[in-house]
Image (cartoon, rainbow, N blue to C red; front, side, top):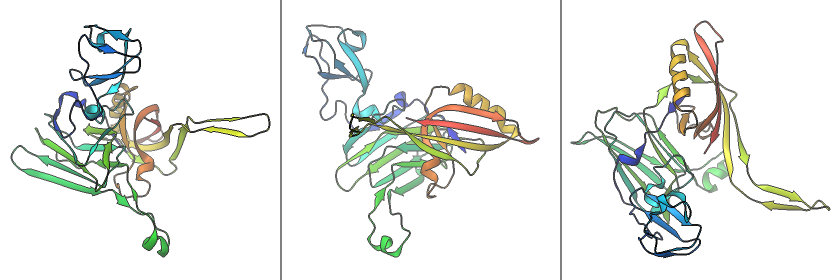
Length: 301
């Protein structure tokens, strides 16, 4: 099990093929007239605001005018860099971002992908010293007929934990798709901390926010809504990792964190035990003289 607390990327983005304002976005203008429901962006803080009370001639920017405007999330360009909201950057292929973290990092994770392929390159300022291309197309086969005729599905997440920990890396992420727009919900970058081994018996489920009601005759009315992944895992960790885990627990309360339950991203269990989420419980039980057990309860974002 590795835990990856993401860096704040708001000041680390060097470039992006997504523009601001992007397609369908319009910037707020001082003194303009806005009707209920109008959405405008602020390039100064990369946020979108929805008009909740018609306003005309105001020179007060939306971020300072809670009476007329409400924050509805990041702009399209910055959506993939905001791990706290369920928003995605959508763009015609390719979507390419360059990040200069100005510190050592060893892990990168992408979630909410709609794409065919992802390429991650790490440059030391002079030359590329790491390149990894991940083909997102896969096919689950148990029979020969499924091997030849089964439909391809596409991974929605990529996790890399072998980035070279350079002092000042330049990291390029290219997301491509042969047809249609690409999409990325979250890009997380940072230093992954190894805490121990995930034990068999991990549980995965979802919190389903759909609504099901029945009338007096038992007929159902179904209102599909979002479902949130949840997981419960037990990790065996050495005694010398306990204090590191306690610090992670303290520092990342109510913050999005990437939990990586296993190293092999090609394993069929990988997506079930790896997610971006918040921990609801991180209980340490001192079970053995040299090892402890940590029970993790994670709620995805």
